[in-house]
Image (cartoon, rainbow, N blue to C red; front, side, top):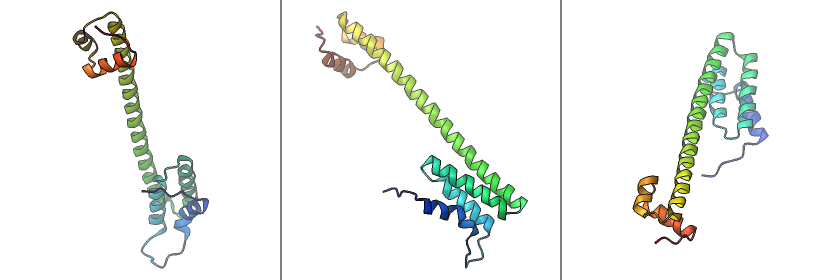
Length: 147
């Protein structure tokens, strides 16, 4: 699926969506403002997303009454909380992957040292938790002659 670039005109249309005249009077400005925030949350470009969200909320203050604005802000906060949870989860995943890579790199270093000391592959596998294939790759990559 090809991603479409969000133009400045698209952003303006999104921001001013709740202020536009609609033939269908079933959609109230509050509902359109909520829809605007929902759509803006899906913008992949972080800076454009921030601009649209800030502008939409800023304009909503001019045309929504206090109760409607509070409802809108609750939805906005909910999206922000969800985004924060997603970011936090991704950060933990990245940290875990980095830690695992670090441990794996340490095991490769230990394996290289054991290979240089002519330790048997089975012993290296046991000491490092690396597979036979990984150890054989180390030997091949570093052209270490293993007897």
